[in-house]
Amino acid sequence: MELIFEKSRPGRRCTKFPKSDVPRSKELPLKYTRSKPCELPEVSELEVVRHFTNLSRRNFSVDTNFYPLGSCTMKYNPKFSEDLAKLEGFTSLHPLLPQLKLGGILTQGALEVLFNMEKLLCEITGMDAFTMQPAAGAHGELTGVMLIAAYHRAKNNKKKYVLVPDSAHGTNPASAAIAGYEVISIPSNESGLMDIAHMKEKLTEDVAAIMMTCPNTLGLFETEIEEIAKLAHSKDALLYYDGANLNAVLGKCRPGDLGFDVIHLNLHKTFATPHGGGGPGSGPVGVKKELAQFLPISRVVKRDDNTFHLDYKPLNSIGYIAPFYGNFLVILKAYAYILLLGKEGLIRTSEHAVLNANYILARLKNYYDTPVDKKCMHECVFSASRQVKNNGVHALDIAKFLIDRGIHPPTIYFPLIVKEALMIEPTESESKETLDYFIDCMIEADRLSKENPEALKTAPKTMPIARLDETKAARDANCALL
Image (cartoon, rainbow, N blue to C red; front, top):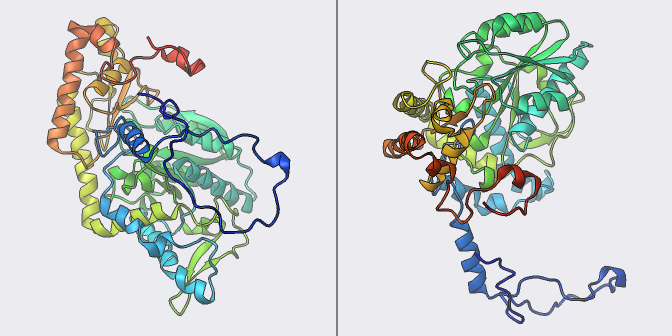
């Protein structure tokens, strides 16, 4: 496919602008002006439309393909919430509109959405207060650890460590380190859960928090979580909940009821708004009441006359962690999604997500190794170690093969504690027919690993770009194709 610059022909135009009817106040200094026209492609409107339409058709997306990206909850994004986010009353607002007089009237609806969304998330998670500002999950993690640090500073606690299970998301230790803590990794036991005995050894008075992904990246729920919370709190350490996997437990349990003190959520995962290549994220952070005073400013507050305003007064706040009030239209989409499904709908979401993952696990466990022989939650993890032993077929080869079958590859080589990991999260959105097709493709990959391994090692064959030398590509983005 040609680059749009290669389609350029002198004199062609997509859009012609009228001459400006606004007088110039003064000429720009010569050093800021161009000596020659800007080098933009000169193409017609039809060529622009065709070029970018054809480019978009080469994308994998939730709307076009099965997207079983483990630990990322790439679920279908209902279009009704996209329509609501386009309402002019929301899209025409400017974040600097004043809260008083006419501007105050215009902003009341948006402020009410933020206020109500905070209350809904508190109810769903068992927390007492939320900030809606963080722009994504990792940003929420960092905000959460900053809140934990503020809590300990206020108590004059001299804490310097954060415990992180080796089955947690990789951003957990990164967030703790950025916030100034040293990270201690806690290994998993034979059951795939955090090793409590090892945790007890490392849980000293110097530990500020334990960051947990629950269910963890093996798709397993930490069954001893209440004991872990009790042990942490006995040392005045806080328990942090990575909410990226909340899709597994919606309506079944509330992290705040289990002993967690801080939680971040991924609205762009659990509550079905576009993310990845499809749009921005949103990572609200919830806390128990002891930490509410440290939440970022500003906070939406409801007055006695039932109007809303922004409060910038909390003296112990960690301050601003994002411009304005978060990715508002993402929050709006998630708000509509929650209202549409309601309590029973959210519970069914979790039930179907867990059912789909266990269906895949049951159908494929005779073909691929599993790190732990037990039922999973919302995602299942396999190992391609068996296929490696067959004829040197790796998880990467299977992932590339799936591309040729019209399926986005699952997460591979993560979690790090599983060799040749294939991490699959089907979500609740997918039908049994789609899951059966995926399962058939995975069984075919296993068969080819024995009968024709080169068919996997040279995949994909149907894409505009074939198999890259990935080591070279990491070092040289312009490397030649194999």
